[in-house]
Image 1 (cartoon, rainbow, N blue to C red):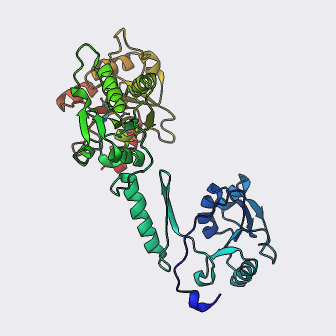
Image 2 (tube, rainbow, N blue to C red; image 1 turned 60 degrees about the vertical axis):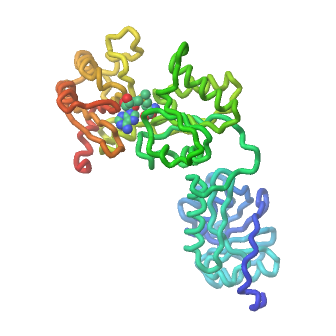
Image 3 (tube, helix red, strand yellow; image 1 turned 90 degrees about the vertical axis):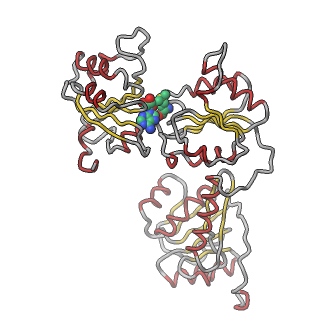
Length: 410
Ligand SMILES: C[S@@+](CC[C@H](N)C(=O)[O-])C[C@H]1O[C@@H](n2cnc3c(N)ncnc32)[C@H](O)[C@@H]1O
């Protein structure tokens, strides 16, 4: 290629590789990094290399590419539309590069960007948008620009309105346990795009302060319910705002389907013919113990964990929980909504066979600035909770896992 063209900017293009032959020379870490995107693009990939990293080998085993276990030889690029040249043999790379030039196959070279006829941009994706950045000779800057754009699109700080008609509807978003950093990327983006947010008391309330002034934020607990039940009133509010053409986010604490009544809302919306997207969230049942240094499972200690609602006492006829059966389990019990009834619950577990010495931890306002933890046993927990004046929201963890993380619990 004539030298005077070397400083010209690269011409960006999106290759549609589905079903088209892509030849990859070399099965090392460069190939390992590039192959997943080629696989996602549906390319017909042939890897030519005597060796491969375990991850590349796994892709071959999974049938995502065909692997020819040998060095490059002239003619390998005969059927290729595109080639990635990344062997550790410079002479082979140069020969393959020359073959690519002769056959007019666009090729990237890991060892010599100047000799390549194509460059791989730093790429990222966010909800249907592919971001590809080329800065010529500064790949770290490309990656930094890519990160800034993708991050901005994801969290809504980069405002790029969709020009296709937005479908009004409701997103049931699990907001995580409370720390605003613990919502999912998708949840955060939907929040940034919402016209109306109906939020629970639990969850990442700090995020609501960041919303632009035109967004209507409604406290679910304050929706007047008159002749309806509170939940029905919330369902009606969701339906009403969605019918008015608004993008509605129903922001819930933790995960919408873990003691969150999320399915009742989804069913009401389906009945009303309103589109509903569910965005899972990080449930407090796992994340709150984790934030306090307690793993809900631990090798050699607990092979199961059971999440139980303590919102009705064991003797209450409305209870659907088989406490005698739970008392016989060896693993971890995680109780939500159980602060007020922990005395009765602990007594029931002991009565049905769980040792009174079983360790218990109670974590109030987990992941938030006010997080605090108190420890006891099944015999003492009710008193510990009373003495420490523990208030909801709190997660109660029962089992030997409570003591395993001591070294890292500070
Ligand atoms: C109605 S349930 C909702 C659970 C939620 N859907 C989830 O997946 O985490 C509410 C209970 O979750 C627990 N909880 C939620 N967030 C918490 C937090 N940050 N700290 C401690 N407990 C929390 C408490 O037991 C609280 O009473």
